[in-house]
Length: 237
Image (cartoon, rainbow, N blue to C red; front, side, top):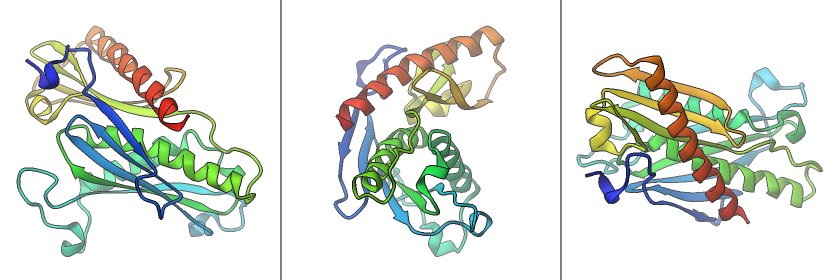
Protein backbone atom coordinates (compact mmCIF):
# COMPACT_ATOMS: atom_id res chain seq x y z
CA UNK A 1 0.00 0.00 0.00
CA UNK A 2 1.43 3.39 -1.03
CA UNK A 3 1.15 6.54 1.05
CA UNK A 4 -2.19 8.35 0.64
CA UNK A 5 -3.70 5.05 -0.65
CA UNK A 6 -2.73 5.91 -4.23
CA UNK A 7 -2.17 3.91 -7.37
CA UNK A 8 1.32 3.26 -8.73
CA UNK A 9 0.75 5.91 -11.44
CA UNK A 10 -0.81 8.48 -9.10
CA UNK A 11 0.75 11.62 -7.62
CA UNK A 12 0.63 12.46 -3.94
CA UNK A 13 -1.82 15.26 -3.01
CA UNK A 14 -0.39 18.44 -4.56
CA UNK A 15 -1.05 21.99 -3.39
CA UNK A 16 0.32 25.46 -4.09
CA UNK A 17 -0.17 28.41 -1.73
CA UNK A 18 0.61 31.47 -3.83
CA UNK A 19 1.94 34.80 -2.43
CA UNK A 20 3.01 33.02 0.76
CA UNK A 21 5.71 35.62 1.47
CA UNK A 22 4.34 39.16 1.09
CA UNK A 23 7.83 40.68 0.85
CA UNK A 24 8.98 38.73 -2.22
CA UNK A 25 8.22 39.58 -5.87
CA UNK A 26 6.96 36.02 -6.20
CA UNK A 27 6.43 33.23 -3.70
CA UNK A 28 4.65 29.92 -3.27
CA UNK A 29 4.49 27.18 -0.67
CA UNK A 30 4.38 23.90 -2.58
CA UNK A 31 3.38 20.57 -1.07
CA UNK A 32 3.96 17.17 -2.64
CA UNK A 33 2.30 15.09 0.06
CA UNK A 34 4.39 15.57 3.20
CA UNK A 35 7.19 17.33 1.32
CA UNK A 36 6.77 21.09 1.75
CA UNK A 37 9.05 23.63 0.04
CA UNK A 38 8.87 27.42 0.25
CA UNK A 39 9.94 29.01 -3.04
CA UNK A 40 10.56 32.76 -3.21
CA UNK A 41 11.69 34.89 -6.15
CA UNK A 42 13.77 38.04 -5.61
CA UNK A 43 14.80 40.55 -8.27
CA UNK A 44 18.22 42.21 -8.18
CA UNK A 45 19.27 44.98 -10.57
CA UNK A 46 22.62 43.40 -11.37
CA UNK A 47 24.03 40.32 -13.07
CA UNK A 48 27.05 38.06 -12.50
CA UNK A 49 30.34 39.46 -13.74
CA UNK A 50 30.41 37.23 -16.83
CA UNK A 51 27.19 38.89 -18.07
CA UNK A 52 28.00 42.54 -17.40
CA UNK A 53 27.58 44.74 -20.45
CA UNK A 54 25.79 42.04 -22.45
CA UNK A 55 22.25 43.37 -21.84
CA UNK A 56 21.15 39.98 -20.67
CA UNK A 57 19.61 38.79 -17.43
CA UNK A 58 20.14 35.72 -15.30
CA UNK A 59 18.02 33.25 -13.35
CA UNK A 60 19.63 31.29 -10.56
CA UNK A 61 18.57 29.30 -7.51
CA UNK A 62 19.60 28.54 -3.97
CA UNK A 63 18.38 25.43 -2.14
CA UNK A 64 18.48 24.40 1.49
CA UNK A 65 16.82 22.22 4.10
CA UNK A 66 15.79 23.42 7.52
CA UNK A 67 17.52 21.56 10.36
CA UNK A 68 14.37 19.60 11.30
CA UNK A 69 13.00 19.05 7.82
CA UNK A 70 13.74 15.35 8.43
CA UNK A 71 13.36 12.95 11.35
CA UNK A 72 16.70 13.97 12.82
CA UNK A 73 18.24 17.43 13.06
CA UNK A 74 20.91 18.25 10.50
CA UNK A 75 23.43 21.02 11.05
CA UNK A 76 22.98 24.21 9.07
CA UNK A 77 25.44 24.30 6.19
CA UNK A 78 26.24 27.93 6.98
CA UNK A 79 27.50 26.71 10.36
CA UNK A 80 29.94 24.43 8.57
CA UNK A 81 31.11 27.20 6.19
CA UNK A 82 30.49 25.07 3.11
CA UNK A 83 27.66 23.67 1.05
CA UNK A 84 27.25 19.94 0.61
CA UNK A 85 27.70 18.54 -2.87
CA UNK A 86 24.04 17.49 -2.96
CA UNK A 87 22.92 21.04 -2.19
CA UNK A 88 25.06 22.49 -4.99
CA UNK A 89 23.86 19.88 -7.47
CA UNK A 90 20.17 20.49 -6.69
CA UNK A 91 20.33 24.28 -6.86
CA UNK A 92 22.16 24.10 -10.19
CA UNK A 93 19.44 21.77 -11.48
CA UNK A 94 16.73 24.21 -10.39
CA UNK A 95 18.54 27.11 -12.07
CA UNK A 96 19.06 25.22 -15.35
CA UNK A 97 15.43 24.09 -15.40
CA UNK A 98 14.04 27.59 -14.95
CA UNK A 99 16.46 29.29 -17.36
CA UNK A 100 15.21 26.92 -20.05
CA UNK A 101 11.84 28.71 -20.10
CA UNK A 102 12.97 32.34 -19.80
CA UNK A 103 14.08 34.72 -22.55
CA UNK A 104 17.01 36.17 -20.63
CA UNK A 105 17.57 39.08 -23.02
CA UNK A 106 14.06 40.34 -22.27
CA UNK A 107 14.73 41.02 -18.58
CA UNK A 108 17.75 43.23 -19.14
CA UNK A 109 20.70 43.18 -16.75
CA UNK A 110 18.76 41.79 -13.81
CA UNK A 111 19.05 38.62 -11.78
CA UNK A 112 16.11 36.66 -10.45
CA UNK A 113 17.07 34.48 -7.51
CA UNK A 114 14.85 31.56 -6.56
CA UNK A 115 15.28 30.52 -2.94
CA UNK A 116 13.92 27.02 -2.36
CA UNK A 117 13.80 26.16 1.34
CA UNK A 118 12.64 22.71 2.39
CA UNK A 119 10.39 22.93 5.45
CA UNK A 120 9.46 19.24 5.48
CA UNK A 121 11.18 16.47 3.52
CA UNK A 122 9.51 13.23 2.51
CA UNK A 123 11.11 12.56 -0.85
CA UNK A 124 11.02 14.58 -4.06
CA UNK A 125 12.30 17.86 -2.61
CA UNK A 126 14.08 18.85 -5.85
CA UNK A 127 11.07 18.08 -8.03
CA UNK A 128 8.74 20.00 -5.71
CA UNK A 129 11.21 22.90 -5.69
CA UNK A 130 11.38 23.12 -9.48
CA UNK A 131 7.61 22.90 -9.85
CA UNK A 132 6.91 25.52 -7.20
CA UNK A 133 9.76 27.80 -8.24
CA UNK A 134 8.22 28.15 -11.71
CA UNK A 135 5.15 29.81 -10.14
CA UNK A 136 7.28 32.16 -8.05
CA UNK A 137 9.39 33.00 -11.11
CA UNK A 138 6.35 33.67 -13.31
CA UNK A 139 4.88 35.98 -10.67
CA UNK A 140 8.17 37.88 -10.36
CA UNK A 141 8.38 38.35 -14.12
CA UNK A 142 4.77 39.56 -14.19
CA UNK A 143 5.76 42.08 -11.52
CA UNK A 144 8.45 43.48 -13.82
CA UNK A 145 5.97 43.83 -16.68
CA UNK A 146 3.16 45.32 -14.58
CA UNK A 147 5.50 47.88 -13.02
CA UNK A 148 6.64 48.99 -16.48
CA UNK A 149 10.27 47.96 -15.95
CA UNK A 150 10.14 45.67 -18.98
CA UNK A 151 7.57 45.61 -21.77
CA UNK A 152 7.53 41.97 -22.85
CA UNK A 153 6.68 38.84 -20.91
CA UNK A 154 9.97 36.93 -20.81
CA UNK A 155 8.60 33.54 -19.79
CA UNK A 156 8.29 31.20 -22.75
CA UNK A 157 6.84 28.01 -21.26
CA UNK A 158 5.99 26.10 -18.11
CA UNK A 159 8.28 23.62 -16.46
CA UNK A 160 7.64 21.02 -13.77
CA UNK A 161 9.45 18.01 -12.38
CA UNK A 162 8.58 14.63 -10.92
CA UNK A 163 10.34 11.55 -9.60
CA UNK A 164 9.65 8.04 -10.92
CA UNK A 165 11.14 4.82 -9.63
CA UNK A 166 11.35 1.09 -10.15
CA UNK A 167 10.51 -0.97 -7.08
CA UNK A 168 10.49 -4.75 -7.57
CA UNK A 169 10.16 -4.09 -11.33
CA UNK A 170 7.04 -1.97 -10.75
CA UNK A 171 7.07 1.64 -12.02
CA UNK A 172 5.88 4.10 -9.40
CA UNK A 173 5.19 7.81 -9.79
CA UNK A 174 6.18 10.55 -7.32
CA UNK A 175 8.18 8.55 -4.77
CA UNK A 176 8.05 9.45 -1.11
CA UNK A 177 11.08 8.89 1.12
CA UNK A 178 10.20 5.31 2.12
CA UNK A 179 9.79 4.35 -1.54
CA UNK A 180 12.87 6.22 -2.70
CA UNK A 181 15.04 4.51 -0.08
CA UNK A 182 14.15 1.05 -1.36
CA UNK A 183 13.88 1.79 -5.10
CA UNK A 184 15.93 -0.28 -7.52
CA UNK A 185 16.02 2.73 -9.86
CA UNK A 186 15.33 6.40 -9.10
CA UNK A 187 14.70 8.88 -11.92
CA UNK A 188 13.97 12.62 -11.88
CA UNK A 189 12.30 14.10 -14.96
CA UNK A 190 12.14 17.83 -15.77
CA UNK A 191 9.59 18.40 -18.54
CA UNK A 192 7.90 21.39 -20.20
CA UNK A 193 4.24 21.90 -21.09
CA UNK A 194 4.73 20.27 -24.49
CA UNK A 195 5.90 17.06 -22.84
CA UNK A 196 9.48 17.62 -23.98
CA UNK A 197 12.35 16.71 -21.69
CA UNK A 198 14.61 19.38 -20.23
CA UNK A 199 16.65 17.14 -17.98
CA UNK A 200 16.65 13.52 -16.85
CA UNK A 201 18.57 12.28 -13.84
CA UNK A 202 18.62 8.55 -13.25
CA UNK A 203 20.51 6.00 -11.22
CA UNK A 204 20.25 2.24 -11.00
CA UNK A 205 20.58 2.08 -7.23
CA UNK A 206 20.36 -1.69 -6.84
CA UNK A 207 19.90 -3.24 -10.27
CA UNK A 208 20.12 -2.16 -13.91
CA UNK A 209 17.07 -1.32 -16.00
CA UNK A 210 16.10 -2.04 -19.60
CA UNK A 211 15.20 0.40 -22.34
CA UNK A 212 11.53 -0.57 -22.23
CA UNK A 213 11.49 0.16 -18.49
CA UNK A 214 13.08 3.55 -19.14
CA UNK A 215 10.44 4.33 -21.75
CA UNK A 216 7.68 3.32 -19.35
CA UNK A 217 9.14 5.50 -16.58
CA UNK A 218 9.29 8.43 -19.00
CA UNK A 219 5.68 7.88 -20.04
CA UNK A 220 4.49 7.70 -16.42
CA UNK A 221 6.48 10.87 -15.65
CA UNK A 222 4.71 12.71 -18.48
CA UNK A 223 1.39 11.71 -16.92
CA UNK A 224 2.40 13.33 -13.65
CA UNK A 225 3.78 16.41 -15.38
CA UNK A 226 0.48 17.03 -17.16
CA UNK A 227 -1.24 17.16 -13.78
CA UNK A 228 1.39 19.53 -12.36
CA UNK A 229 1.24 21.82 -15.40
CA UNK A 230 -2.55 22.06 -15.05
CA UNK A 231 -2.28 22.84 -11.33
CA UNK A 232 0.34 25.54 -12.00
CA UNK A 233 -2.02 27.25 -14.44
CA UNK A 234 -4.96 26.90 -12.08
CA UNK A 235 -2.91 28.45 -9.25
CA UNK A 236 -1.93 31.44 -11.41
CA UNK A 237 -5.38 32.02 -12.90
